[in-house]
Image (cartoon, rainbow, N blue to C red; front, side, top):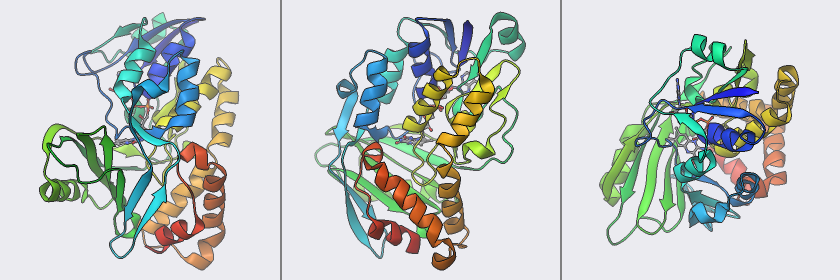
Length: 335
Ligand SMILES: Cc1cc2nc3c(=O)[nH]c(=O)nc-3n(C[C@H](O)[C@H](O)[C@H](O)COP(=O)(O)OP(=O)(O)OC[C@H]3O[C@@H](n4cnc5c(N)ncnc54)[C@H](O)[C@@H]3O)c2cc1C
């Protein structure tokens, strides 16, 4: 098939690599080649990423910039640590570029749907939040985010991952180390305190701003993001809501979604069903997050859902790259 992959983020780059041997794939990216970047904190889990990288004949370890041991959680009234088991940061844009190596990519381009329709058998909307080639999601939900890449001179504020959830879990501030001297600091917040919180951290801990970015992150889950396909266009990744809503974590879910797409190439309805099944727990997780945000969470009424989320994360500790304890979940639920 002749396949257009629009949006060379984590899903688009991975798809180029996986499909290039058997199909004629062409990538389109709206950024210029020089400015091509990934607006993201670059945190992920080593085990699953190594498996994705191997499928592209790459070694994920080569891209790791910080291998986490501990995550400091600061909930004002309560501070605790989460033991990490694989959570890391990595050079996300370099891996995307290496996955896409050898493929034809048109940079600085947002192609017109008519042109794509006349030239390609299949068009993948991998444009992430922008979802430029599919109708608007049935029910969208997203948070604004803001982030700096910081360079530190002699000392870093934290030696490992640091998270500060905001009251009612309206969002959180993150500090993700990127090697010895660099870190991503940023925040996403429904109450729009994300810029203020990020600047407050910068003021307190110093450091030189290397880069400033921001974009909304989609927390609407796949069941809210239909249609997944329309005409020749099929959505893959954040364009159809593959972000784990409790953490705002979309790298592994978007690559998982790309794998489902590849397994069901040309069988759109089966792809739709499998995506909905794979990510079905995400709706429960989003319901928890929204209840917390709107101060509607009731421990008695919602305990069964909280337990289901805990059990899912406990079962997938290695996938999330951290030890999951019911006590920590309860701390978040009570925040
Ligand atoms: C500030 C921030 C921090 C985050 N931190 C993390 C994290 O640490 N870990 C994690 O797992 N997830 C994180 N996420 C979420 C994660 O980045 C995304 O969910 C994930 O990258 C989605 O992958 P994608 O390929 O679907 O879309 P994206 O990675 O967003 O890629 C979409 C690509 O499409 C391009 N594009 C957009 N519109 C068009 C168009 N019309 N034509 C052509 N090209 C277009 C964009 O330039 C981009 O290159 C974060 C998100 C944000 C906003």
